[in-house]
Image 1: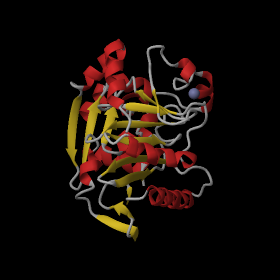
Image 2: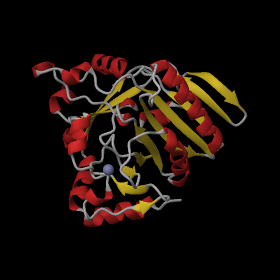
Image 3: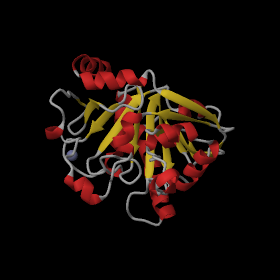
Image 4: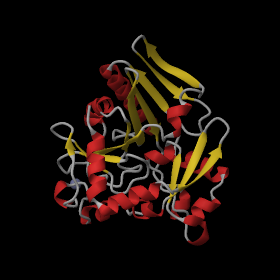
Length: 294
Ligand SMILES: [Zn+2]
């Protein structure tokens, strides 16, 4: 087990900007939307404007200093080596409590398939947390540097909703299940298993199916979550059609800074602008999900 708390508390002590942003989380404004069979929360978080509004085209990415490369990290930032490749760090721009970033050592592209085994291993080694992965074209603010994130368990709506949501079983054997959430406003596939190998093989099967669905040989757009609880792995895959909804590309009054990554499709819409937060409605939520998810 990894002692994330020692790292986290140590960084809180010495890193003023980080501590200030963490303390702002305690007073962050939330709105809850009851969508019938599920809930969505909106979070007003002005500190996320840089990330939500960021240009992510290849040229912009190539011209900026990669904030996940060790040489560009603030000198005050410390980490815990999880294995020979990945390091656990605090996320200096947290959205949720206990928010961590887990970058790979070398500057290499964001892709899940070669690293799903590490993701599954880290779920068990960080039992206090839910891990997440943003596809390079659907939420990752560093699509050029492979990384996972993690947030303390108990904050994401699907962690509770999985107990009550209606499901359709896609595949089942005595060591695990792959099922689809129904009436959930967006497609979510839930994999659970007592075996790491079966968890991985279900994920790989799903990956191929999503490639076919999207008609591509590239990585299918997705946001992925995972945690380990009660001797079982749980993975949640939210397949994506695209990153940003039409509202993001409007001008003037029609513009909304809605840029959904994993945490947004998991049920916490992060809105950096006051207007977008105050004016959000159920119709807008449903419209955004129908555009960016299946
Ligand atoms: Zn990098």
